[in-house]
Amino acid sequence: MKRKILLTSTSFQDTPGKHQTLLHKTGWDIEKMRGPLREDELIDIIHEFDAVICGDDAYTDHVIKKGANGRLRVISKYGVGLDSINLEEAKKNDIKVLNCPGVNQNAVAEHVIGLLLCFSRNIHLLHQEVQNGKWARITGNEILGRKIGVFGYGNVGKEFTKKCLQLGFDVTVCDPYDTSLKTDSEILNFAIAKNLENLVRNVDIISLHVPLTPETHEVFNQDIFRVSKKGLLIINTSRGKLVNNMDILRAIEENFISGYITDVLDTEPIAPNHPFLGNPKILITPHIGSRTFQSVEKQGCMAVENTINALESIS
Image (cartoon, rainbow, N blue to C red; front, side):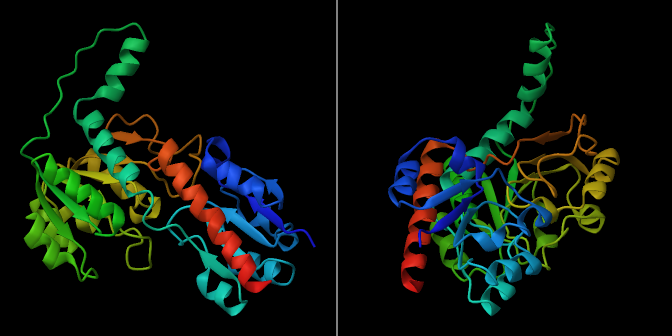
């Protein structure tokens, strides 16, 4: 029987490259939908597919059970984070779950630096003013000399740390679970914070690079803001649910933090009435940190290759 594959990653679909050629060479019956898909969008169709190449679709226990009762045997994540997939349920039902670690760190790290420069110099606001026919000359801030904190020392956190050090910044890293941190700090010359509270007390800017887990869910809330250095700037290219949205807004209003820069939201795409809209101290990009032609091609090829190998192993 011809393999039937569901492709939902919009980055994969929208970007030309070798990943497209590799996918079509498989000869699979490929159906495309534009994710991220909700549980109610997946539940009635998932059993029809042998494998999915997905982004951040909601692979809940109900979706996985329904898929396992049909043809589903492989979930291949285009990307790294697996928090939207119920891994325990997948394991129970012998569904292989694969991802693409170590391919997008440069793209995301570059995006963080771009966001930081844009926000600090008000480039996003000034561009819109000029587009509206105005010549408002808003004074910005230099970032040289400011202390940067990195929360999470995975592939992206490591790459961002290296780039910051190359630019001459004073960097402090916090990741209590990374065993390579001490060795790297001695080689690269960055400081280590023993916990998040210690980190936010001593840096001007913090970039989030931790996965979403029960421990990190909304870890950036009013309690953290009240112990952080006054005027902390937060950059989030990891997961939207690392922060409490209303606490972010309250902290901006009360000047505990100077702003929030994010590439991710708790629910995507952004809702028309999202509380972040219209706030000049919040800069949002639409989850495109890893969406470069180079990164999409590498991630796409890995996701397809993972799917090929997984299906061959169970045939």
